[in-house]
Length: 554
Image 1 (cartoon, one colour):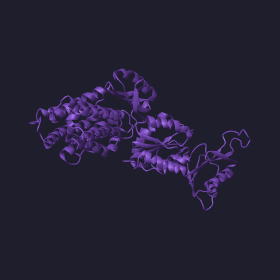
Image 2: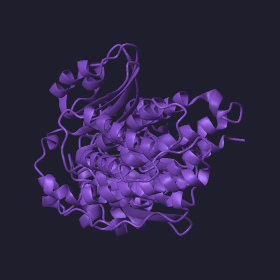
Image 3: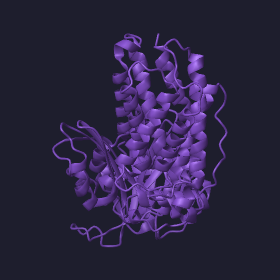
Image 4: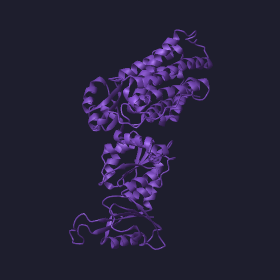
């Protein structure tokens, strides 16, 4: 049986996480500082989730060892480290430091019950830890909110008739006093959040409060609700930001880069200056054996190289320019373009490398996130890592859709902090057929297996204009050339070539999907007339360059 004290603490964390999950998108839509990338809610949720998972591990351990045998120091240290490694982005890293500060205060007071005095001390140390982690603290943010929470609790303690608990105090008494003092902290936090726009001009310009500060009050409200045995304490909802483009220095850099460093005798201060030469929004936090690094930069590899020869892990790279575009679309455009909303609660997501507006929309329509690979379908590893980050799930199947992408895709899967499985799709039309098999309720391994089966059941074809004269004299530049399963099978004029490719593909097929590319030389009616009634031909606009038609036969 798990230790009751661990289970009670876990219940509080779970309640705070549930409240944050419920308003996750609302927090995202407030995010304008330091960059309007719309991921503060996501980053805070991931940090809290890491803490909850670590508590589950500790609870399982306590079935074999008692809480006293495990020791408070081991528990809070493991929780603080889990928060650190699970943190992403500015908001996630700062939240991890709040957790670390509070945890260190608990370690320093062995034997004490969680009473108002200890809560006040933990809040004060959390605020100090968070401020100490930021080179240039900005007031009006989550930092101000936690500091003013700590100040209010300290003031309340001077007036409370009962601030300490006897060693034999029951769980109900502990919950009652903890709820009382945390309600005072929450009240101060709400007032601080409301004052944020007066302290930070970018918030005032966008018509919002600070996303991180508001997210922190949401977490605290969930915990108070759990202590009171009620639903989450009601907080006023916040309207999303006006779509503006604040002039932050951070907008000059593309990638939000996060990773962990493990080694010995690590001095976090020694690395900051060098990282600031590569970018901005630098955070390096942790201890002598483990650091978490956050930096906005155009050169993620160079940022990681700063820490050589130490071990680098938990790599997460987000394309901030893409995040800002997604946020703007979410707040001003059709909701259908935002995959994250459609995939809320998904276990597994998918990412496809694409080219062509039509193919982009077809993949999005199947719930698949997309990365524009350009005309050559050749994105970098950094591009792939950033795109994997944007998929709203911790399990991801990656459809490279070109043999050229395989090596970079495998490397990105290896480096990503998520569980990523690369599906061997070697063409856009094959990738589209595989994407139909996506089931977001199952994990990446199961989805990759289903997609592999789908790939095995299809044949592919293509017709394209020749890019150069054939050395054997069979065709010249601009002539049509036709492929079946990557083998050149026919050449000549576009109509004859497409008809021959279709004839080969339809010999054993019941359905053929045809994707019309950019500047295809035949009308759709002429293409549809090439098959008889025994085979169904689905013709869609792919918009791909280089290929007039891409085909998949099932």
